[in-house]
Image 1 (tube, rainbow, N blue to C red):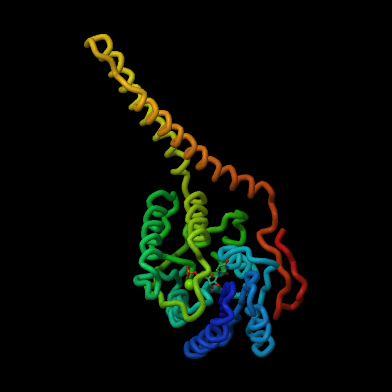
Image 2: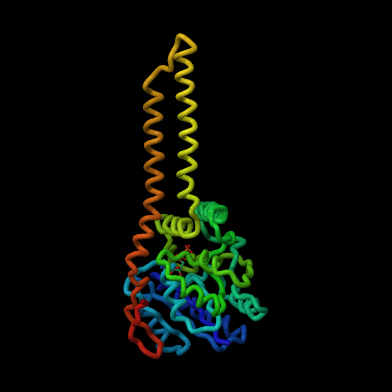
Length: 317
Ligand code: UDP
Ligand code: MG
């Protein structure tokens, strides 16, 4: 059985050589010889591409995709998945936060007949309390709101059978949230718990803004709850407003006082103005996504590829 290992790399010059060494060692230790290591350079600005080229020149089991610019982690993975030839495909980060040893366990599960073996992070070492807390909240919110059941604390570290890979390739959406898409696909899935190691070297390529983007992508791709939320908040605030009206009229008619003050008016107007803009923003998020889909641009472009039969880039239609 042929195994593909897809490694997305963005400015990872400090870790690639070590990652490659570890992956090869682990595969050898597990007695797996029929494999390809598919590195995807996501438009790195450092020496990553050069290092990958050198690795490919010395190791025929290495293949390299060079994207034309930085397209982002999820798209880099998608490019790798599309070019992988394995009967099973493993996704693993370049920074050794996903321990290569766990791949053997995933392969074991696959041989037992599971189609997807996904890594569940039971612990995260070397990550800031902030990242851990926000990740925790995000995965729980996503799980609660999404129509698809997406397991908690699961990243992209996983093994997928060819059937699942083909299903993923057939999903044309541009906003790609791979871990959610794999859940949507179904098949027989199993969790493989592991402890997320600290980054081997270099720093995270997921600053807060990118993390937020990923979170919004995940939520909007798998849930319509934010859209529906606007209606519920609308009904609720209309209800409160109606109570206010009844109260004001009753006070005027039944007592010799009246509801005083422009302060309440000011607060009400600005508050509901805020809510309306927020709701508009939520709608905008979805409309923006429809726009991106409607443009039907290719998901990514290749600058070149190394170790394939033909080095000519074939952009996805
Ligand atoms: N990555 C990528 N393109 C990007 C950002 C990240 O290919 O635009 C890769 C990166 O090289 C690494 C993986 O995605 O292999 C996960 O990124 P990182 O380790 O920086 O994220 P973190 O583990 O901090 O969430
Ligand atoms: Mg990392």
